[in-house]
Image (cartoon, rainbow, N blue to C red):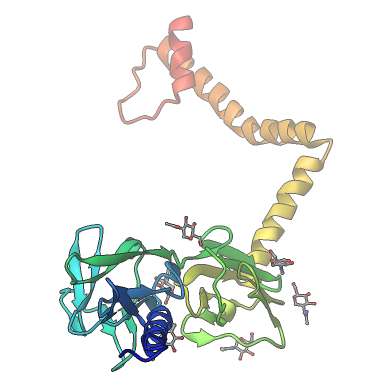
Length: 312
Ligand SMILES: *[C@@H]1O[C@H](CO)[C@@H](O)[C@H](O)[C@H]1NC(C)=O
Ligand SMILES: *[C@@H]1O[C@H](CO)[C@@H](O)[C@H](O)[C@H]1NC(C)=O
Ligand SMILES: *[C@@H]1O[C@H](CO)[C@@H](O)[C@H](O)[C@H]1NC(C)=O
Ligand SMILES: *[C@@H]1O[C@H](CO)[C@@H](O)[C@H](O)[C@H]1NC(C)=O
Ligand SMILES: *[C@@H]1O[C@H](CO)[C@@H](O)[C@H](O)[C@H]1NC(C)=O
Ligand SMILES: *[C@@H]1O[C@H](CO)[C@@H](O)[C@H](O)[C@H]1NC(C)=O
C-alpha cells in the first residue's frame, strides 16, 4: 500500500535543490541534485583600467569556486605568464599577484607602471577547458611642460614669470611644488604661486623685482608627474644700465637731423692733415725725381703718392 501524497517530500526536495542551484551553484542534471564545482568569473570592478605613468596599476580579477584550480595573469603582447596563484613568474619584479586568503580577488599589481605596459592582460583559470577574462590597461604619460624657452633672461628689477602644465589631468591631482635649484619656493612676499589642479594641472610662478640671486634652475614638479625645468638668468642692474646708456647715445646720434652733415664735416676735418701730407709728399717726390733722386726702399711712400707717379 502506498500512502496518499507519497510524492510530496520528493517535490519538496526537488524544489529546494532547484532554488538552491539558482542561488548557490547547484544544478539538476537528469533530475539528480549535483554540485557545480566549476570556477566562474564574478563581474570585475573594471575591465578597462587607466593608470598614470610611474604609479601603481591594479587589475582585479574575481573568481568564484576556484577549488584546487589556479588563477594566472598573462600579458597578451608576448603571452608571458606574469603570475600564477600568488607567485610571480615575470623577471620584471614590478609585477605582483595580490590575493587575500579565502577571497575571490586575484589582483595583478603593476608597480611603477610604464607607458609600454599598456595593452591587454588575461586573467586565466586552468580548468579544462581553460576559462579566461580579458582586461585592458591604459598607462598615460605623466609629463610636465614648461612654457617658453628653457633659457630665460630677465633684467634685475623686472618680473620673472614662469608657467607649467601637465600632459593630462590626474585623479586625484596631487600637489605641485616649484623649486629654485634644490630649494622649495613658498608663496608670499615677492613670490606669487597660483596652481589649478582641477582638469589639467596649470601652475604660474611670478617673482616681482627680480634680483641677481633669483637666478637659477627653476623646476615645476607636480607630485605624480615628471619634473620640468627652466634656467633663469637675472642680468645685473649695472650691466643692464650700461647697455641701456650705450643704446641711448647711439639712438641720440642717429636721431639727429644734422647727422650726415656733421659726419662729413668731421671726416673732412680728420682727413685734412692726411691730404696735406700726401700733397706735400707728392711734391717732394716729384721734385726729387726731377733732380734724379731714387727713393730708398726703407722710405715709406704712401700708396696714393706712388699711384700718382705713372700719371706724371
Ligand atoms: C579604455 O578606456 C579609454 C578611456 O578611458 C579608451 O580611450 C580606450 O579606447 C578604452 N580601451 C578599450 C580597449 O576599451
Ligand atoms: C575584492 O575586490 C572587490 C572589488 O575590488 C572589493 O570590493 C572587495 O572588498 C575585495 N574583497 C576582499 C576580500 O579583498
Ligand atoms: C597671484 O597671481 C594670481 C594669478 O596670476 C592673481 O590672480 C593673484 O591676484 C596674485 N596674487 C597676488 C597676491 O599678487
Ligand atoms: C573642469 O571640467 C569640467 C567638466 O569638463 C568643467 O565643468 C569645469 O568647468 C572645468 N574646470 C576648470 C577649472 O576648467
Ligand atoms: C639676495 O640678495 C638680496 C639683496 O639683493 C638679499 O637681501 C638676499 O638675502 C639675497 N638672498 C639670498 C638667498 O642670498
Ligand atoms: C635643473 O634641475 C633639474 C632637476 O633637478 C635637472 O634635471 C636639470 O638637469 C637641471 N637643469 C640644468 C640646466 O641644470
